[in-house]
Image 1 (cartoon, rainbow, N blue to C red):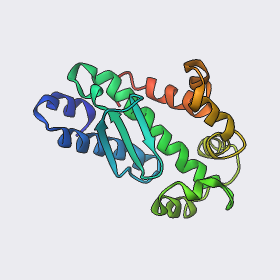
Image 2: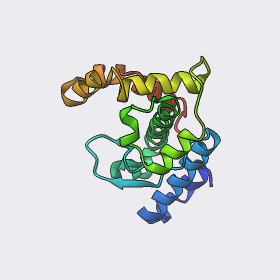
Image 3: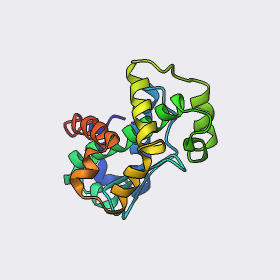
Length: 176
């Protein structure tokens, strides 16, 4: 089912069925990009409206997004968080053996990245991976952590991975 079809029956679905439907939608998109599927899309009470969990390869969404009138925000947030999963996978595809990424992502995701390494060139996926690796795991990680710990919204949105994910999420127009 695509997002529009899922939303047409949204109010009939249990939370578990909604989570499963969203997982199927996002995994279809990740598969097109050659990125391993997420294990789960989980509704809960999140401090942010969405969060990509790289350790367990899950996407967490705030339950408030599951209200039927929030479908546009749900769509853009889901795509935004899925983009973070792609960023981290691309980072793994270009990462050096000593990168911190190998201790963070699940073994099956690491194996998939190692089996599909990207050359350090100007291709879109390689550039995305290099930027994400630098910002999240490399020499930009301490700045990123300081922003997460006490930065303002403008600084947070200026992080390279957030700029990219916001652009992709906003491009959905409310429907992935």
